[in-house]
Length: 339
Image (tube, rainbow, N blue to C red; front, side):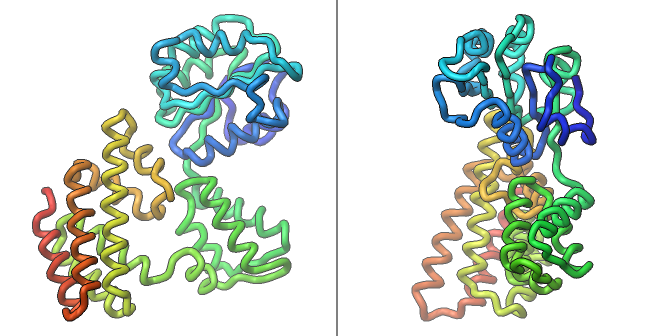
């Protein structure tokens, strides 16, 4: 069974009686986690109860394809249903899922989170075509989704916002549902019951001009774009951004590149590798990071992190022109960026 987007909310609160296995898949890891947990609480008040809840990983299934089926067949010590929670990328779950769905599953609910799949993936097709299982896609929120989520959360405390403030929220958020919800809830808390948010309030809360300038510098640096680097530095100096903040921001960017590159080496797609980063990178940075993954291997990215740490120490030693040192050092890195 394929659950259509418009049916997801009702399914998560009252699934059909014949359904005893659900696959949550897509590219929004936060939304996968939120929906899977929400659904799991229908069947257990305590998801940490080892006597009635079994947790499995994709790695565990590599050598034991019968593990999901065996866990589902176990009699729960308490309650009337055995709950089996499975997390993995997708491909390594397929055979175990096939075996489990091939058998009757009375008094059992299997919930699988697949973090690296598309709608064409074999495990997605398996659940979509089953009469006793369901597939729920979890994809990045659209602008309309973010606006609807914001309106919903703000309505709870009767918080209002200007149209420009809503525009900024929709522009800055959307890469990860759980993260977006958290940021919107923080905005509501900042406004207070019955409060109102203006564009400047949201802009400051979600990321000011200085942080955006640092993002542009890191992007130009990783791209080997000298002209853009110079422009981004001029913007940062205009915003009076501290030189050490710039270097640390670049360190964070290259560290994220290294982590995402390692995730790709372990089988994740570029998109999911970037989305799995914690904290999640800004929505606008994700496409840039994915593009840079094609040229920056993990060891090269970490070499840049080490180089940037040396530059930070040099800046902190004093006795030098911070802006001149920063510009010259970053220019040297930029000129050596892989093409």
